[in-house]
Image 1 (cartoon, rainbow, N blue to C red):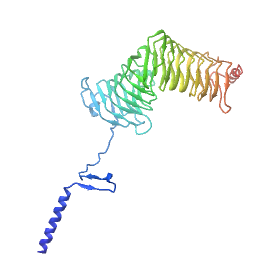
Image 2 (image 1 turned 90 degrees about the vertical axis):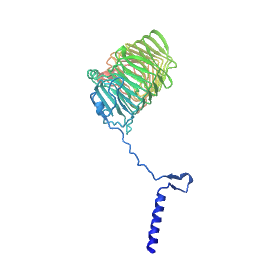
Image 3 (image 1 turned 180 degrees about the vertical axis):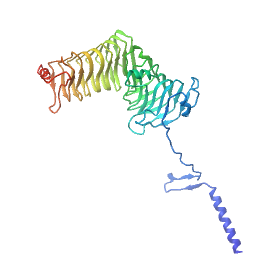
Image 4 (image 1 turned 120 degrees about the horizontal axis):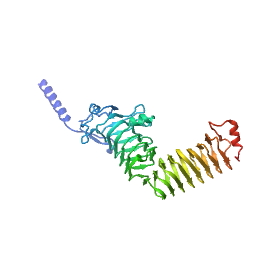
Length: 431
């Protein structure tokens, strides 16, 4: 009988344990808001693994790297829904070169794991690519860039399209050099040093994009560098391109940033251009006058390329990295303007430079001028850390007032001057 009772007791215990095991368990804490139910059907945590960097050097490599599709226009090779963590040690998280198949990168993210910027996508000698609805944080896309122009032309890309992408800085964006028929549309660029950099590319289309505290840098030598440019805004204001206009007065009030190309005999006036990469870009134009404009808080106030004659009259430049920057200019006349709290008030290469009746105050970098026959006169320099004139063998300084703190360094430096020439210049009229 004792044995029978033990057996029955054991069976009852086993039955109760089994019944409890099939029930949900409620765990209560002292704080009623912390109570929760746990069904004991707990799924293991899923580890997050970002996509590995990939390199594609032929059409066949798309399928080998897990892309879907067949590479034709109606069924492009497709990479979708991936997250990449590019590093500064990689040429790109995705590197594609020497392909002509149609491909599409869609709904992918490129987010470096350090504060340093890193390249998200690098394309070289590639055609027929489309990048859609991707996110780039402190990273971007580089198209066929090389310091050697011959090599860059050989590596150029064609028919690359960006749609509905987001680029957020401080670095990254899109860089295109010697490329053909690149299209950027419906993209957001936020707080980037250079949202789009264009160097000697052809038939660029920039449509319906928004730029916030950033903008475009265009350095081009061909008038057909752009194809379409409309619907863009910078800080909520129109980002406009003026092309093929001659002998006209253009009121810049109400614009956020302006690009002028293939124009002549223009007066550009009344602009307030701020918080963008370049306030005013002037390319492949002639006899341009910029008058009564304010340039505030940008990388560049005015950026000039291939401009025979530029006049800047009664403008103000403040809180800029460089107020005026340009090369390949014939003659530049800057007068009656104010340069305040900039890293460099002037950085210009021109055959003839006249810089007169200007106020230059609280500058970190001073003045940098390079030209064969510059004239610098009747200016006021206040609290300048360094004033530098490069290659000015025939410089003439007249009635220039220097007001500078004793602890600041004031010097003239030129590769073409000897000390006796410097002494002659300094004694020629500085008061």
